[in-house]
Image (tube, rainbow, N blue to C red; front, side):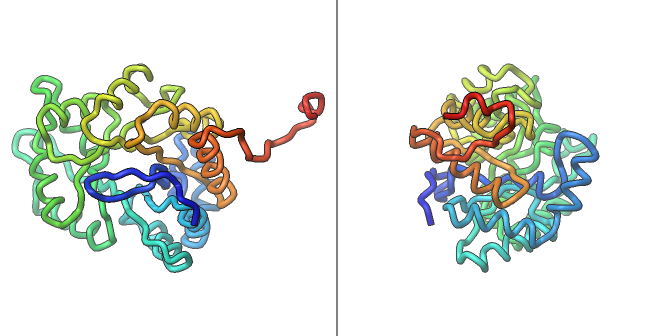
Length: 284
């Protein structure tokens, strides 16, 4: 196994590249036709396991996503069996939120079974999905309402709490209030895709964060080419931060690992270039 760079989050050693899973599950952030293609070609245990295996063998052993999904959880286990590598799972469950939740708090009779399920499926980190987290962000009080109780329940189950967010405020308010979150999932790409403020603002926010940040969407869901998206991400985050990368095939997995290693080691690219007839005049 190659030694992909690592960092420590909440006392756990994780690979600085994290395996993204949206494309495994059919979420392209592009078109319905592309979603359908992903579902038809990638969303099955064998295809997903083939991709995860490449990452595991390269030392990328951390994976993020909706763990309570049979193709994904089964594929992780299959890749673990093939490689002997134990995956470090960052689970992002959705928790029920109602109009009363900000005032009354989460209904723990609904929340606890969800957390129990993710613990049973092997989650090391439990980071409520942004649809849950961002609904609780309060700009007036500069807090994330009622999330402290959820983080405590996550701790009780031996998982490491964190927050997944699309809002820059989440990281600031969690840090300001001392919320028990060991890490944050945050959007970060050179295009500003899905980001709510300018890229330079988010860059400054990540560098100021008190905890390591797991950045997502480095290639803007396929709208940036890997070399451009990954070069920006790796060069503008801290050594403690991470980059989450989604791929559709084993060859793509191998490619993003190699591109990233070239960038991190500051050496010329060793990845074969794609070719078209129009490039004939620039070939040596």
